[in-house]
Image (cartoon, rainbow, N blue to C red; front, side, top):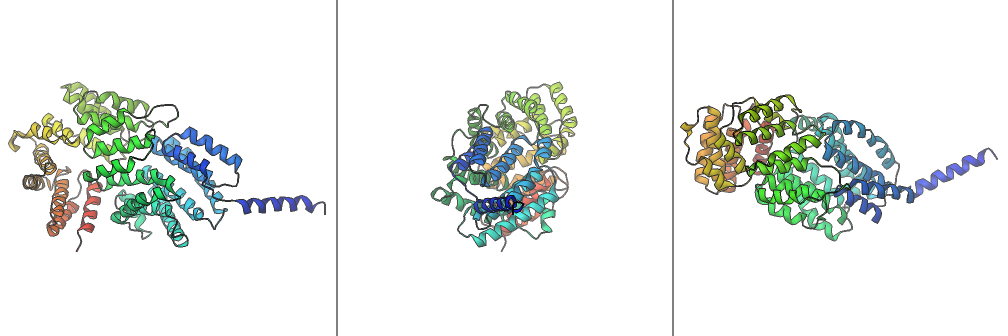
Length: 493
């Protein structure tokens, strides 16, 4: 009997632990989670460590560990960090799988971990593994929704998966097609918008910031609808002003949605301190926003980004923007020096960096067209028009500039709600550039389709979405094709 006694005690202890194992998203865990969403990573780590000691059976801290890895990689984009952290996934899933199967967090937590690593791997071009994890997350969420239909956090990730499916890189999209998952952006957006409305009055209100973060990304990058900017401001109003993620959302949306002055204001007031996760991308955003204003001070922020960033994206694009900044100052030697860096530094993985290489190998931009382009991107439409409204197509010597001139006038008139002039110049751009590799013609067709869609002329809208889709071997091809496909879905009979 003496031999069996220790084994019996050990068995009882294990069984007792398993009986007490749980998913307790308690106040301590909520505070840690909110710190992660504010990018106060060290404070979150302290709370998680304390929770593990106080409640060793609680699995939520291990889910939060994964959130930390996810947001660390989101902000650093470091390949070395990715290789170091990705091995954490397996042990966390093992922990979840041995926990309380009757909890709505049981399948949800496993899905969350898979989804976060799927999104992270996609950034590092591990498309096959990313597709497997995304499929696994989708299936777990579907099952959890059936078991716990009132557990509304399921909608956070189901909405996200639906919304992003149409905008994935081609390699990822092909990998996902093997699993038969076809998302619907409109459906995903509706799900997330509904969740934003429901969460504050629910027991799961702590998920609000994360849902707004994902929805704002979709509204800005995928839908790319500038009319949604006020919604983003409203949705982020309740987020803690000391949150660095709030700064990112508003700064990024302002810069991308032609509210450039707002972006500069928000980014200039970003919270500082050692408690925050380093986020060099915010300096990149500020540099681009300053350049949109034709402010030579853009170089300060762009060089800060290059000095502090350890990731793989936007290095070539940053050097291209530095080159443009020098060109605007009339410094041809500075322009050429930075163009040389575009060709030799960084990685051509992100679409912006690939485009930077293309433009670095092109002839020097026409300065007036460049000013119009930058001012337009900042939302300064009248100033943009003043740069080229006294020009004629024959004033430009090379075909690229002739096409861009028509395209840029189309874009400006479009934003000034002068549809007749916009459609006229868009058509010129399509006619001149449909067989060229510049993005101007295909994006002009896409914009024409959007104008006709807004006019409820769906047949013409479909005609030009198809035109944009059928143009091949041009810059930003994947992005334009994704938007054209989504437009065809929206305007289908």
